[in-house]
Image 1 (cartoon, rainbow, N blue to C red):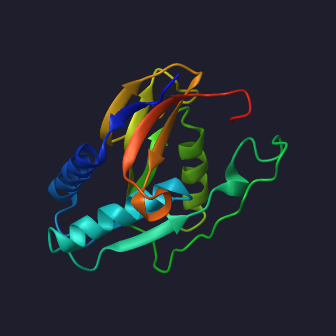
Image 2: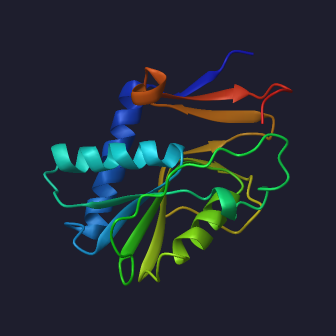
Length: 184
């Protein structure tokens, strides 16, 4: 079965700009806010958001971090192949800050739970919000929801959302594809 395009390049860029508008409405100049991308794919989204906020809305000095959750995952020891550890990059204090966690797809909520556990090792933020590009509703294992959503998709368990970025995948688009037996 051929993958279905959920967002093409133009739609993706419009969605990212809308998410930036929503962030500006709630965080103004980001003076007390931090954008924190969850490794690996949330980092790509968070970098893109920060770039748009800088270049198109002239918001400077946004604190941006990258959070690895590998050792906080509940399936850490259950995988056949070892997980790839990414780098955590937090060169500022999160204590008493408003943290915006960013990930590309919200599915079961387990990644978000791991990110919250990991984040608390770096301090106690005033608040934590969650931004996702794609929300696969009806798939939660945990009671987690996003504060900012690019697009909501109804999908079944045998489907996968694939977010592609031109920086790593040579094009911007979001696809809904059927999982094959070899896929995770």
